[in-house]
Amino acid sequence: MVPELKRLIEQMGKDRGIDKTIIIDALEAAMLTAARKKQGPHVDIEAHYNEDSGEIEIFQFKTVVEKVLDPDVQVSLEEARRTLDEEAEPGDSLGTKIEASTFGRIAIQTAKQIIIQRVKDAERDIIYEEYKDRKGELVNGFVQRFEGGSIIVNLGRAEGVIPPAEQVYKETYKRGERIRSYICDVKKSSKGPQIILSRTHPGFIRALFEIEVPEISERLIEVVNIAREPGKRTKISVRTKDKDIDPVGACVGMRGSRVQSVVQELRGEKIDIVPYSDDQATYVCSALSPAKVNRILMDEESRSMEVIVPDDQLSLAIGKNGQNVRLAVKLTGWKIDVKSESMAVKQEEEGFRALMKIPGIGQVTAERLYREGLKSVATIAAADPEMLSSIPGVGEKTASHWIKEAGKIINEDIKGVF
Image (tube, rainbow, N blue to C red; front, side):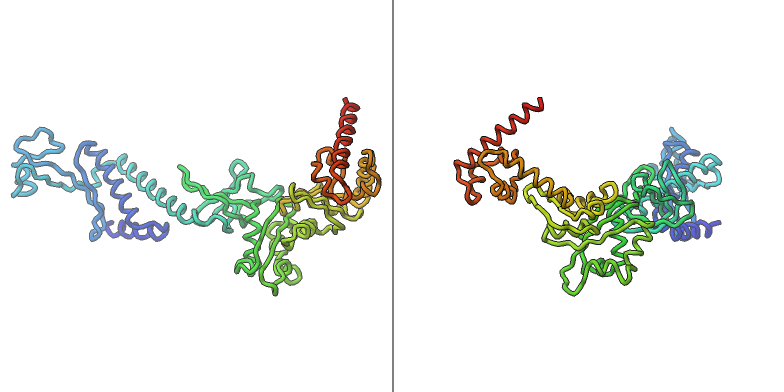
């Protein structure tokens, strides 16, 4: 029995990765509680683990007195000298060993519950410490069960949870199935650490590419940005400072082997790998791939671009339900308005006609204003005379006249509406 407790402590520490002292502290606290249940709450009791004998020793201490008033905490001088210490003196505190077998079933059951709870708390602390700095990592696990729409994942010593918001629409799993996910958060709670996992986080894509593309993990290639609609399509932009490395080619791999590994993990999600460029017009054109772009009109102040594509490329540039252009906007941070050549020509013609309504503006002048970005009567009305007069061939007086007349046209249009 004695060596058994010692062996149990060592085995439990090894199996659960808990420091032996934590288990011993739990045992001491449990036996102390059990002893107090038996002897009473106000008695002076101590519990210590004896390493040599391998047992928890419990002692009840009483103070030596001439006359006993409380037998639970006091012992007479005569009895103390007869049964405990023949040299005892009044005021001494003497301990008597209590056998655990006298505690009773309820007290022992309480002790067991305390030990179990203390060990659980220690395990939770260890798991939290292990995972708190692992945010942004990939983990492999197995689907353990389903709770309220969440997937509970067995990670070995710990459990992770994939909430509904972090699951990819239409992905389904069965109990026991392998699942790879991304640690997006680790929280402490009364029930233990909560390891929040995700399969929708953009960081999941980044981490997968780091595994498949050594140049990314070695920081030779940088992932600049990721735009994702989970389960449907992802755009990822990459760049490198090493002129000998093709960042897109490295991510795609020989015959597409690297990107296919990522696509396979994502269960068929499409991935576009885009080369980043400091030239924002070039970057936006790449982001709209696979569509081809004819020309771009850029407004840096509002960070917006009007992108003109061939007529047969319009649906490709916009994508199904606007997905391609929407992801390009997320990836680049630019507002993108995609138009076909025929739409642009029609708009230009309408713009010219509208500008030519302003007295003093003919076709040549309208074309010049259009090239300068002044494409409507409203932009002329809102323009500053000084800005307009900076255009070659336009004087300040003419500019003021155009602004005034443009304002009149707008007012007439407003009256026509109301």
